[in-house]
Image 1: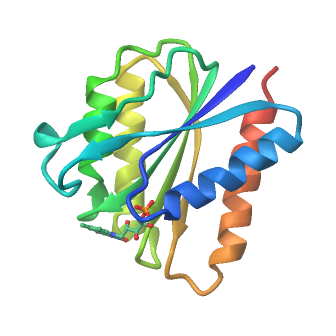
Image 2: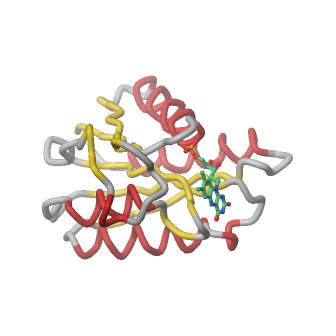
Length: 159
Ligand SMILES: Cc1cc2nc3c(=O)[nH]c(=O)nc-3n(C[C@H](O)[C@H](O)[C@H](O)COP(=O)(O)O)c2cc1C
């Protein structure tokens, strides 16, 4: 089974958590790759204006972890645009990773997860779990470990 971690990360927070998850998956003997979504120009623009310079293809993966930051109390426009333009991924298992600055998930993280869940389900995927990391939380490290453990367990329960 091949696991793709498809990540948009502007300042490196989401990427750092995704990298830890990839390393844990590899230590467990899984084939796991990070692919970064990259954009030209201002990444804070509205989804319709986003122009991609790197557009990962989800089709080679059996399971996909989509990783994204929160922006404006919602899923960031780059990930909205990415999921919107993505071809159907019917039958694939999906997990979601979200990072946000604020210390509580109701300040954007929960909403971003709901948005990603809906968009992935509309493309035919089965969303099996999610994790939110609140970057300004005092116990951020513990939270990252819990999220990485949970998402890696989800990936390791399928053959
Ligand atoms: C334009 C902008 C808007 C943001 N809006 C929010 C927000 O509404 N809620 C929140 O918790 N964090 C917000 N953040 C913070 C990011 O979600 C947070 O720093 C995240 O971990 C960044 O991930 P990255 O380093 O992978 O890009 C915002 C950041 C930017 C740049």
